[in-house]
Image: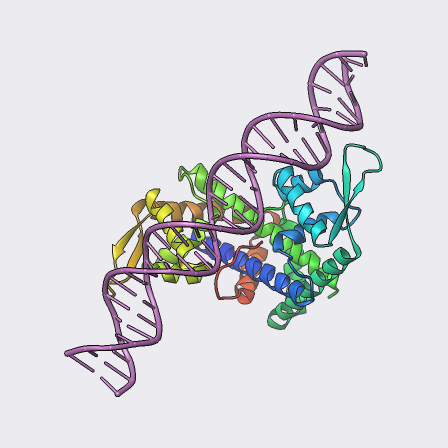
Length: 148
Length: 148
DNA sequence: CTATATGGTCAAGCAGCTTGACCAGTGCGT
DNA sequence: ACGCACTGGTCAAGCTGCTTGACCATATAG
């Protein structure tokens, strides 16, 4: 594959990612969850299963723990999360989603599903499943980083 | 497709996009082009063919023209672009890439090709072409927006 | 029981964006 | 040909989200 084709693939991928991010964010806002930014979604993804510590969240987001702490402050202030004492470590605090936080997470899933449905209209269900499988196989682990 | 599957697809897409962005940026830096941020790449993409005005660039990046102007200042200061008088409009200035700017563009293409080659190792050439075709079909136009 | 490592916060600073005000040049309507 | 709204661009000030640096409280290894 030529460099220019690789660049076309990269550009398309980034354009799709950017558009998807925007779509999800707008969908979440439209469902009544105010003051939510795209970055919050990635925090939600980490907090959702069982909560997380600020340090853990910082590592996941690839930012300093101070930045993660500020982000948590914001989520707490807006009613999406709360800090609880950590059950096993008196230094740490466990950040967990509130009921509103869970609602926001579901709203994000709905918005994502809406966007993916449109891809289904363009490509067909079969191709979307293929896309999903391919992306899952090449997705890196490590900290989540902004696409640009 | 269930909402949770759509979310898994979305998360994978954004993870791949984030990783790709990081890979390209690191590759460009490693090739000796200092002080380049991911955002610059999208400016380069617009400037490359025939140059562009600041206002045009701003629309393409989805930011104010003041922000675009500052970005151009930075590119000029670092030797990647230069401002020329616009041949058809005395108000406007045409921002064009310098030779170093073109070198940086080529470096980005090489770095992208490197990342895509690894996908080829994981998926096979055939699947990568399929991925490319699918993404090109669902890529939105409109301004380029940060993935989060 | 000390010494070092780890989780978290406070404070200050900085980079990249925004809004608002403004000037220079364009080009349409009359 | 001329007035006037429009457009391209810059200057200045301010905000937001991040960083670095300093620090405290608790945990853990020796």
